[in-house]
Image 1 (cartoon, rainbow, N blue to C red):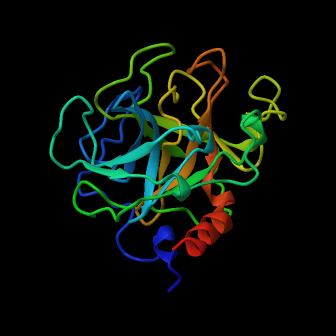
Image 2 (cartoon, one colour):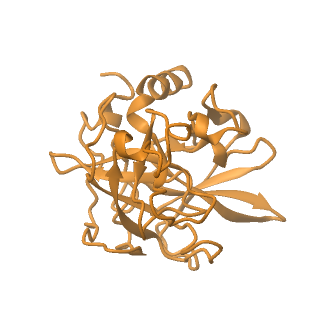
Length: 268
Protein backbone atom coordinates (compact mmCIF):
# COMPACT_ATOMS: atom_id res chain seq x y z
CA UNK A 1 0.00 0.00 0.00
CA UNK A 2 1.26 3.49 -0.81
CA UNK A 3 2.28 5.38 2.37
CA UNK A 4 -0.47 7.93 1.79
CA UNK A 5 -3.21 5.50 0.76
CA UNK A 6 -4.95 5.98 4.11
CA UNK A 7 -5.44 9.65 3.27
CA UNK A 8 -8.27 8.69 0.96
CA UNK A 9 -10.08 6.52 3.42
CA UNK A 10 -8.97 3.32 1.69
CA UNK A 11 -7.43 2.25 4.95
CA UNK A 12 -9.60 2.03 8.05
CA UNK A 13 -9.45 4.83 10.53
CA UNK A 14 -10.15 8.27 9.08
CA UNK A 15 -13.20 10.49 8.96
CA UNK A 16 -15.24 8.61 11.58
CA UNK A 17 -15.32 10.55 14.86
CA UNK A 18 -16.12 8.74 18.11
CA UNK A 19 -18.12 11.79 19.24
CA UNK A 20 -20.74 12.52 16.58
CA UNK A 21 -21.08 16.14 15.48
CA UNK A 22 -24.44 17.92 15.66
CA UNK A 23 -25.30 18.45 12.01
CA UNK A 24 -28.43 20.56 12.18
CA UNK A 25 -26.75 23.95 12.34
CA UNK A 26 -28.45 27.10 11.03
CA UNK A 27 -25.75 29.54 12.10
CA UNK A 28 -22.38 29.04 13.76
CA UNK A 29 -22.47 27.28 17.13
CA UNK A 30 -20.20 25.52 19.59
CA UNK A 31 -19.21 22.16 18.15
CA UNK A 32 -19.66 18.98 20.16
CA UNK A 33 -16.36 18.48 21.99
CA UNK A 34 -13.93 16.32 19.95
CA UNK A 35 -16.49 15.69 17.18
CA UNK A 36 -14.00 16.98 14.56
CA UNK A 37 -10.94 15.12 15.88
CA UNK A 38 -8.74 15.92 12.86
CA UNK A 39 -9.07 19.69 13.47
CA UNK A 40 -5.82 21.22 14.71
CA UNK A 41 -4.82 24.64 16.02
CA UNK A 42 -1.71 26.12 14.39
CA UNK A 43 -0.01 28.42 16.87
CA UNK A 44 2.95 30.79 16.61
CA UNK A 45 5.33 31.99 19.31
CA UNK A 46 5.45 35.61 20.44
CA UNK A 47 7.04 36.92 23.64
CA UNK A 48 7.44 33.43 25.04
CA UNK A 49 3.80 32.41 24.54
CA UNK A 50 1.96 30.64 21.73
CA UNK A 51 -1.09 32.16 20.01
CA UNK A 52 -3.68 30.61 17.69
CA UNK A 53 -3.35 31.82 14.11
CA UNK A 54 -4.95 29.19 11.83
CA UNK A 55 -6.70 25.88 11.66
CA UNK A 56 -5.56 22.76 9.86
CA UNK A 57 -6.25 19.07 9.35
CA UNK A 58 -4.33 16.04 10.62
CA UNK A 59 -4.11 13.85 7.49
CA UNK A 60 -1.46 11.35 8.66
CA UNK A 61 0.10 10.70 12.08
CA UNK A 62 2.98 13.06 11.25
CA UNK A 63 1.36 15.36 8.67
CA UNK A 64 -0.91 18.40 8.91
CA UNK A 65 -2.54 20.21 5.96
CA UNK A 66 -3.20 23.95 6.20
CA UNK A 67 -3.21 27.09 4.04
CA UNK A 68 -0.02 28.54 2.55
CA UNK A 69 -1.05 32.04 3.66
CA UNK A 70 -0.91 30.87 7.29
CA UNK A 71 2.85 30.33 7.05
CA UNK A 72 5.53 32.95 7.71
CA UNK A 73 9.20 32.02 7.44
CA UNK A 74 10.03 34.31 10.36
CA UNK A 75 7.77 32.59 12.92
CA UNK A 76 8.13 29.53 15.13
CA UNK A 77 5.08 27.23 15.17
CA UNK A 78 3.58 24.37 17.06
CA UNK A 79 0.51 22.26 16.33
CA UNK A 80 -2.06 21.53 19.02
CA UNK A 81 -4.13 18.37 18.56
CA UNK A 82 -7.11 17.29 20.67
CA UNK A 83 -8.03 20.92 21.36
CA UNK A 84 -11.60 22.03 22.07
CA UNK A 85 -11.78 24.88 24.59
CA UNK A 86 -8.67 27.02 24.18
CA UNK A 87 -9.20 28.77 27.53
CA UNK A 88 -8.53 25.67 29.65
CA UNK A 89 -6.23 22.65 29.62
CA UNK A 90 -8.75 19.85 29.33
CA UNK A 91 -6.31 16.92 29.18
CA UNK A 92 -6.43 15.47 25.65
CA UNK A 93 -4.31 18.20 24.06
CA UNK A 94 -1.10 17.19 22.32
CA UNK A 95 1.39 20.02 21.74
CA UNK A 96 3.84 19.11 18.97
CA UNK A 97 6.67 21.46 17.89
CA UNK A 98 7.32 22.16 14.23
CA UNK A 99 10.78 22.53 12.70
CA UNK A 100 11.23 25.29 10.10
CA UNK A 101 12.57 22.86 7.51
CA UNK A 102 9.48 20.65 7.87
CA UNK A 103 7.02 23.19 6.45
CA UNK A 104 6.23 22.73 2.75
CA UNK A 105 4.38 25.53 0.97
CA UNK A 106 3.05 24.85 -2.53
CA UNK A 107 5.71 26.03 -5.03
CA UNK A 108 3.17 28.05 -7.06
CA UNK A 109 1.75 29.93 -4.08
CA UNK A 110 2.03 33.73 -4.43
CA UNK A 111 1.55 35.65 -1.15
CA UNK A 112 0.57 38.81 -3.06
CA UNK A 113 -2.15 36.98 -5.01
CA UNK A 114 -4.45 34.82 -2.89
CA UNK A 115 -6.93 34.69 -5.78
CA UNK A 116 -4.26 33.01 -7.93
CA UNK A 117 -4.83 29.83 -5.91
CA UNK A 118 -2.42 27.15 -4.65
CA UNK A 119 -3.14 28.23 -1.06
CA UNK A 120 -1.99 24.97 0.50
CA UNK A 121 0.85 23.91 2.78
CA UNK A 122 1.89 20.71 4.50
CA UNK A 123 3.57 20.52 7.90
CA UNK A 124 5.57 17.51 9.03
CA UNK A 125 5.30 17.13 12.81
CA UNK A 126 8.44 16.63 14.88
CA UNK A 127 6.87 13.53 16.41
CA UNK A 128 3.92 11.32 15.59
CA UNK A 129 0.46 12.19 16.88
CA UNK A 130 -1.09 9.70 19.29
CA UNK A 131 -4.37 8.67 17.70
CA UNK A 132 -7.24 8.12 20.15
CA UNK A 133 -10.88 9.13 20.74
CA UNK A 134 -10.06 12.85 20.56
CA UNK A 135 -7.30 12.86 17.90
CA UNK A 136 -8.01 11.15 14.59
CA UNK A 137 -7.11 11.49 10.92
CA UNK A 138 -9.18 13.36 8.38
CA UNK A 139 -9.92 11.61 5.07
CA UNK A 140 -9.08 13.28 1.79
CA UNK A 141 -11.55 13.04 -1.11
CA UNK A 142 -10.81 11.10 -4.31
CA UNK A 143 -8.56 12.96 -6.75
CA UNK A 144 -10.47 15.42 -8.91
CA UNK A 145 -13.79 15.05 -7.08
CA UNK A 146 -16.00 18.15 -7.32
CA UNK A 147 -19.12 18.38 -5.16
CA UNK A 148 -22.45 19.54 -6.63
CA UNK A 149 -24.13 22.85 -5.85
CA UNK A 150 -25.75 23.00 -2.38
CA UNK A 151 -23.94 19.91 -1.08
CA UNK A 152 -23.99 20.26 2.75
CA UNK A 153 -20.55 20.77 4.31
CA UNK A 154 -19.35 22.16 7.63
CA UNK A 155 -16.62 24.67 8.34
CA UNK A 156 -14.93 24.30 11.72
CA UNK A 157 -12.48 26.53 13.53
CA UNK A 158 -11.69 29.07 16.22
CA UNK A 159 -12.06 32.02 13.84
CA UNK A 160 -13.66 35.34 14.80
CA UNK A 161 -17.36 35.11 15.59
CA UNK A 162 -18.05 38.10 13.31
CA UNK A 163 -16.04 40.65 11.33
CA UNK A 164 -13.64 42.35 13.75
CA UNK A 165 -15.01 40.25 16.62
CA UNK A 166 -13.24 38.18 19.23
CA UNK A 167 -11.84 34.68 18.85
CA UNK A 168 -14.04 32.09 20.59
CA UNK A 169 -12.65 29.75 23.24
CA UNK A 170 -14.60 26.72 22.01
CA UNK A 171 -14.36 25.18 18.55
CA UNK A 172 -17.13 26.48 16.30
CA UNK A 173 -18.92 24.83 13.39
CA UNK A 174 -21.31 26.14 10.75
CA UNK A 175 -23.20 24.56 7.89
CA UNK A 176 -21.84 25.92 4.59
CA UNK A 177 -23.52 24.47 1.49
CA UNK A 178 -21.24 24.25 -1.55
CA UNK A 179 -21.65 26.97 -4.20
CA UNK A 180 -20.53 25.38 -7.46
CA UNK A 181 -18.05 27.00 -9.86
CA UNK A 182 -20.81 28.04 -12.27
CA UNK A 183 -22.64 30.00 -9.57
CA UNK A 184 -19.59 31.35 -7.71
CA UNK A 185 -18.07 32.85 -10.87
CA UNK A 186 -21.22 34.78 -11.83
CA UNK A 187 -20.62 38.55 -12.01
CA UNK A 188 -22.83 39.35 -9.00
CA UNK A 189 -21.07 36.67 -6.93
CA UNK A 190 -17.25 36.46 -6.81
CA UNK A 191 -16.83 36.64 -10.58
CA UNK A 192 -14.47 34.70 -12.79
CA UNK A 193 -11.33 36.73 -11.96
CA UNK A 194 -11.31 35.76 -8.26
CA UNK A 195 -12.22 32.08 -8.49
CA UNK A 196 -10.21 29.22 -9.99
CA UNK A 197 -11.43 25.70 -10.70
CA UNK A 198 -8.97 24.55 -8.04
CA UNK A 199 -11.11 26.31 -5.41
CA UNK A 200 -14.39 25.50 -3.65
CA UNK A 201 -16.91 28.17 -2.64
CA UNK A 202 -19.30 27.49 0.25
CA UNK A 203 -21.87 29.54 2.13
CA UNK A 204 -22.60 33.05 0.92
CA UNK A 205 -25.33 34.30 3.23
CA UNK A 206 -25.24 34.63 7.04
CA UNK A 207 -22.77 31.82 7.59
CA UNK A 208 -19.11 32.03 6.68
CA UNK A 209 -15.56 31.57 7.72
CA UNK A 210 -13.71 34.47 9.31
CA UNK A 211 -10.19 35.48 10.35
CA UNK A 212 -8.65 32.65 12.37
CA UNK A 213 -10.54 29.93 10.48
CA UNK A 214 -7.92 30.06 7.71
CA UNK A 215 -6.27 26.75 6.93
CA UNK A 216 -9.06 24.79 8.57
CA UNK A 217 -11.20 22.10 6.98
CA UNK A 218 -14.39 22.12 4.96
CA UNK A 219 -15.88 18.83 6.15
CA UNK A 220 -18.30 17.02 3.82
CA UNK A 221 -19.88 13.64 4.44
CA UNK A 222 -19.33 10.99 1.78
CA UNK A 223 -21.86 8.35 0.75
CA UNK A 224 -20.13 5.75 2.97
CA UNK A 225 -20.74 7.94 6.04
CA UNK A 226 -17.15 9.09 6.51
CA UNK A 227 -16.27 12.76 6.64
CA UNK A 228 -13.88 13.99 3.95
CA UNK A 229 -11.97 17.28 4.00
CA UNK A 230 -12.83 18.86 0.64
CA UNK A 231 -11.52 22.35 1.35
CA UNK A 232 -8.86 24.42 3.13
CA UNK A 233 -10.22 27.81 4.24
CA UNK A 234 -8.46 30.41 2.07
CA UNK A 235 -10.19 33.81 1.91
CA UNK A 236 -13.35 35.81 2.57
CA UNK A 237 -14.62 39.12 1.22
CA UNK A 238 -12.88 42.35 2.19
CA UNK A 239 -16.40 43.72 2.79
CA UNK A 240 -16.82 41.39 5.75
CA UNK A 241 -16.83 37.72 6.60
CA UNK A 242 -20.50 37.07 5.87
CA UNK A 243 -21.16 39.29 2.86
CA UNK A 244 -24.11 38.21 0.70
CA UNK A 245 -23.04 36.38 -2.49
CA UNK A 246 -19.41 36.34 -1.32
CA UNK A 247 -19.10 32.78 -0.03
CA UNK A 248 -16.05 31.63 1.87
CA UNK A 249 -13.43 30.40 -0.62
CA UNK A 250 -11.48 27.22 0.03
CA UNK A 251 -8.58 25.52 -1.70
CA UNK A 252 -10.09 22.41 -3.32
CA UNK A 253 -8.15 19.53 -1.79
CA UNK A 254 -8.99 17.08 -4.59
CA UNK A 255 -7.10 19.33 -7.05
CA UNK A 256 -3.83 18.84 -5.13
CA UNK A 257 -3.83 15.06 -4.69
CA UNK A 258 -0.56 14.56 -6.59
CA UNK A 259 1.31 17.33 -4.79
CA UNK A 260 0.19 16.08 -1.36
CA UNK A 261 1.22 12.51 -2.19
CA UNK A 262 4.59 13.52 -3.64
CA UNK A 263 5.44 15.86 -0.76
CA UNK A 264 4.71 13.18 1.84
CA UNK A 265 6.53 10.44 -0.10
CA UNK A 266 9.62 12.61 -0.69
CA UNK A 267 9.88 13.66 2.95
CA UNK A 268 9.01 10.44 4.74
